[in-house]
Amino acid sequence: MAARAYWQGQIRLALVSIPVEIYPAAKSGASISFRQIHEPTGKPIRYEKVVPGVGPVDRDEILKGYEISKGNYVLLDDEEIEHAKIESRKTLELVQFVDTDEIDPLYYEKPYYVVPADDLAEEAYIVLREALRKARKIALGQLSVRGTEKLVALKPCGKGLLLETLRYADEVRAGQGYFKAIPSTKPDADLLDLATTLIDKKTAPFDAGEFHDRYVDALKKLVARKAKAKGKKVIEDVEEPASAKGGNVIDLMAALKKSVGAEKAPARKAPAPRRKRA
Image (tube, rainbow, N blue to C red):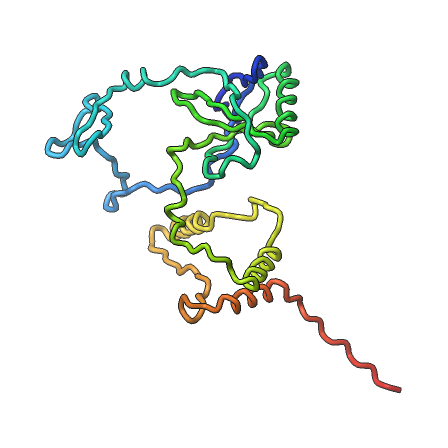
């Protein structure tokens, strides 16, 4: 089944308009979800809308409320909220360009593939892609979709273009408050050299296929065993890596040396037999 377009419209750069379609680049993984079950009957549990001291209420009696102070709400109905939504414009105007490394990774949210909508759009699409690549720039704009406006970044991606939604400034927490207690002293040069050596030894090209969600894998195996056991309890201990002896206090130099040695120690060959003298 073909993927459904997240957005259809045109990218505008000054007087140039490029018809495009945008598709999600990410998909939900093989996660496992659970439902709450009433054990005696084996039936799923449902939730009712209730008011304390009143009990269950009808759905048409429910409004949305924004709390302006403790226990005080401004009430809004669906029509009022719908009226506040911005018009769903079909144009993504590129209003600014920044260096490729200027945007902090904290601001990136979700990736989308951008493709030309038809053959006539391909030439302008390719020109924009190559111009961004040559200038080493990222284009910024605001995308109107489903009543909201998203800040987006557009960049080259192989033969195509990648659009990433960005968080607004008020959606990102500043890190200084979390890091202020960390001392600014320089590390020991020998320790730094050992740590750098260990990093170099473990450096390899990134391959997302090499990594798996071990928790999800374990849950799948557990569900399979449970189904086979016909409801009987199945508990197995998960092996944990052995903790270092001596508690939390360790000799950092010794630990780094041992780690580097384990990474670069080659397999020893058996010594060749000595020749007997004539």
